[in-house]
Each structure stands twice: as C-alpha cells, then as structure tokens.
Amino acid sequence: MGFTTLDYIVFSLYAVVIVAIGLWVSRDKEGHQKNAEDYFLAGKSLPWWAIGASLIAANISAEQIIGMSGSGFAVGLAIASYEWMAAVTLIIVGKYFLPIFIEKKIFTIPEFVEQRFNTTLKTILAVFWIALFVFVNLTTVLYLGALSLDTIMGTGDGSFMTYALIGLSAIAAAYSLYGGLAAVAWTDVLQVGLLVLGGLVVTIAGLSNVTPEGGILNGLAHIYDVAGEKFTMILDQSNPEFSNLPGIAVLIGGLWVANLYYWGFNQYIIQRTLAAKSLKESQKGIIFAGFLKLIIPLIVVIPGIVVYVLYNQPEGTTQIAGVVDAFSRDGGGVQYDNAYPWLMRVFLSPGFLGLVVAALAAAIVSSMASMLNSVATIFTMDIYIPYINREATDRQTVNMGRITAGIALIVAVVMAPQLQSVPQVFQYIQEYTGMVSPGILAVFLMGLFWKKTTSKGAIYGVISSIVIALFLKTPAVQLPFLDQMFYTLIATIAIIAGVSLTTNPHDEDPKAIHTTAEMFKTGPAFNIGAYIILVLVAVLYAVFW
View (cartoon, helix red, strand yellow):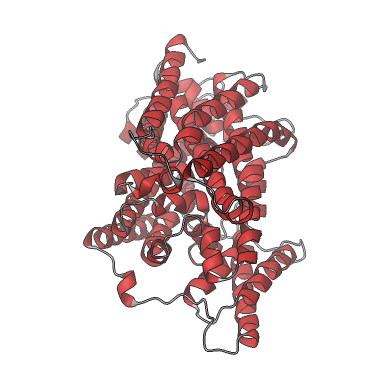
C-alpha cells in the first residue's frame, strides 16, 4: 500500500506542529537577550519528564528502529540487550556521574576534561568529537533516515532520497538553529510520544495479522510457539550471530563499555541532563528514560519477529502475498532491514501509515537536532570563546552557535549521499567508533574515581587504546566485537595507572576530583525507580534466558 493523500496530510501536519512548538517555546522573552545558558542548556529549566523524553529522542533514530527490527528478524529478542542494559546503565550515570558533572557547572564534556586534566587534551577531544558528530553521527543519521523514507514513501530506488534529505534537514533546522536546546528538548516530548504511539501501531498491526484468526494475544502466542528460539536473550556459540552478541559476555563485558561511554560521556546525550532545574530533577529524568528503554524492544524487535514468522511459514500457508519476494537479496540471502518498512506498507491503513512515517521522521529529526546543538555547544564553548573571541557577548555567542550548527548541517547534507558506496553503513560506523570509545571511557573513569590519574597517563592511555583496538581487531585474534571493546578498556586502564604511578610524585594529582558519600545520595523517587528497573530487567532475563 502506497502513500495516500491522507498520509501526506498527516505527515505535513506533524512537520508544521513540530516547527511551531519549537519556535514558540524558544522565543525570546520580552526584554531578555538569549545567553549561552539559554541557548546551550535551555536556561537550566528542564523538568524531569522533558529530560527523560529528550534522552530517548536523541538516542533513537530511524536507522535504529529499522535496524533493530531487522535484527529481530535475524537474531530475535537477544538484540534487546542493547535497550535493557542501557536502562541499568542510566541508573549508574544518574547516581555516580551526574552529581560530579552538575557540581562542576560544565556546559560540555571537553570542559570537564580541561578541569580534570589540561587544555591540550580538552582541545584534542573537542576537535575529535566535532568531527565525529558531523562526519559520522549526523551524516549517518541523515543518510540512513532519508534512505528509510525513500523505502517507505518512495519506490526504494533512490529517487526520493534528495527530497528526503532536504525535507529532514529543513525541519530540524527550522527550530533547532534558532531555539537551541530548549527548542530541541521541548519538541522531543512530542516526538517521543509520537515515536511510541507509531511503534505500538505497527506492533499491534503485525501481531493482529500474523494468524488467520487475528488478535494481539493470539499473535503473541503464535510467534512464541512457532519461533521460540527467537526469544532467547543469551546466545550460545553455535548461533551464527554469536560474534555480535557473545553469550554471557553481553552481561559482563563489552556492552557495558559501549553503554557507559554513550550514556555517560556523549555530549549530545548528557547535555540535556546538564540543563535540568536541579540534580534531583535530572536524576528523575534519567529514571524516566530508563523505563522508556524497557519498552523500546516491544515496538521495534517484536515486529521483526512477526515478519520472520510470516517469512518462514510453510509454502502455501503464508497469509500475506509477496512476503518472500520482499526480502530477497541479489546474490541470495535475506534483506533483514526490509522487515519494518514492509510491515508498515502491508498492514497499515491510510492515515495510520502517515502517522508511523511521521514517527520515524520524528526519530530522525530529534536525533539530528540534538547533534546539531551539541556540535554548536562544543565549538562555541571549547574553541570559539577560548581561542577566537574571549570577550564574546551573549549575542555573539548565540549567533556563533547558530552559524556552527548551520555549517554542520550543510556539510552533512553534502556528505550523506557519499555513503551510498559504503556497505552496511550503520554497523560499520558502530564498529569503528567502538575502537575509540574504550580509551575515552577509561580516561573518564580513571579521572573521575582515581585521584592519582595524571594528564600524561590520560594522553598515553587514549593513544595506546587505539593501537590495542587495532591489534584486537586483526583476524589472527578473532574476538567478538564487544569482547574487543572490553579487553581494550581493561588494557587502557592498566596503562593509565602505570603511567600515572611512574610520573606522579604526589599521593594524588593536583586536579583530582574529590567526592564524598553525601554527593552520591539520591532521593526517594530515584531510588524507587532504580529498584523497579533493576527488578524488571532481572525478571526479563530470567524469563527469556
């Protein structure tokens, strides 16, 4: 089923409403000129529910929805570890990282690096993160998002790509460049609601049509009976996907590295927690995001399993014509990532299709807006002000943020089509970003919690971590990707400790972080929420082990 006039109306309404809300919430108050705190940290006024929604909106994009649904087809529920383990990671970030960051009153993660280590390391990492966000994250989200819309709204041959690239960029730019983080965070509340609603619509439609008699509960029982192996969380070595999700190591190994780096030290994620009214408000937002992470697999992984069941029904019993043809790949094999778009096109009626496509667009736009704002924040606060204009006024600071975000968006639009020649873009980017993240995580963990860590130890650690990661990636070693990340982290920590001990004549580094037990005390709302999340995660793994 193609896009109808009603679908276009629904989608257009989404675009108009999002831009209108973004511009309205970020308008200048009478007699007040936006300053750096207003533009980059939303005036430190965000409530917990906006923070939690914005964290998820920044995290989930269309390529993740479609990619995780494809993984649901190929792997099953085991891919949900990325979501459920993230919920636990958020608790750690909220309890042990946020109190230090907020107490330091920082705008950016590089700013913390300068306070703890030195300006040289801060500048190196600031330039690295800007390049990573623009040339990797932003470009990838824009390209794969446009590719997704081309598959759903167009014919899938690339003819709709240019329109999708321009349309997504225009929506993100229309409110995020002007309004800053306030516009991004407040629109994210609506975007996440739309994302969850759209995902539930697809899941319900799939489950209701996977059996002849229909019904959601019948559908759930049927896919569990027919594809019980897809409901296993811990894969054994005989599973062809073991190299991506290496059994029990998922719970105790490299997935912690990926999650702690992403949720704790990634500027476009952590920035919205720094914009909270207070530490307790920020921590409640973290817990809200944790609960949202628990339900994400329901709306992205289950649809992939539904399509797997339809695809593998015995010949002559498939209820939906064309399901096998839709997943054929030139040269053999199965095109897993077609699962979600195919389910949408086949089962959703006019209007609902427009709603779900709007939800996908919301995921793309919110992630793009978050990245644009973070690029602007890092460049303005860590490069422009200290190196170019130390006496910058509020107007100059905000305008530089807007200019930086605009340039970053233009670069991404120009670069995005070049990714057509790169096979498996999302997996490729994740793997090679993972070569750097263990070293950076090691630097932050040691800098936060070991007072003897020195700047020289941190620099040696970051550099050596790349060498270690490259070695572990060689075919001779043959380690699963997540194991590579875990061993790189351990080795880097050892190097940082060794260099620090041999170069620091004092009991502690002069810039060491001093923490107290009082700093890590959390309120009742955080504690109760954290316990509930931990129990739910434990139950989920116990049931689907």
